[in-house]
Image (cartoon, rainbow, N blue to C red; front, top):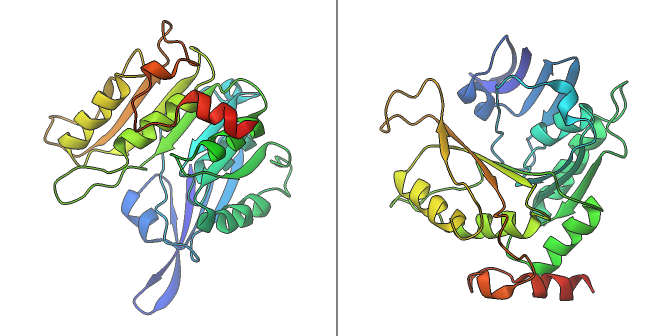
Length: 258
């Protein structure tokens, strides 16, 4: 893996070349170019202050081909653009103010031999808006195979996130079948956040198990966390009685779609 990072340092623009991932270098960059798995992705973040998540796990490249994915909080779009280049059908989502930046980065990566034209769509999504969720499902146009979210839960001074329940509810409403997998990765900044996410996920998903990084030696370490959650086989998706009151009900989403 080769990573080129453009950043402002000591009063001037500099370019650094790395042969591995460096979280802090990436967060300080205003442009990042990644070469890996035969693909090249370039993303620019100068116009909107959005954090850029990275992942480093080995994956069978062919497994992404034809997979229908929705990414929450896409930010600059690095993860989703990369997966689109590997053959996935991706719907990138974020707030309306971020969509122009996403659009620019998708366009910048649509002209080479591994073009993502036709495999990457952009949809505005506020997680608790039924109309937005309906628009995302319409863009997918079929079963959602996977919902992805990377570092989307920011915490307050008490270690809580106002979005913990909301993001889980959104994942649940985007899960079109018991086969939909929801992958949530985040920096382990708070044990309170971890408990809140587990509690919210238990209402909707069969599993809510955190898988610590291999480098994490204890619960006190702040390593990355990764959840792999799957819909409960016994839950009836069109039954509003099983959905907590703070979540958009499936019926309200269906009405918005109509």
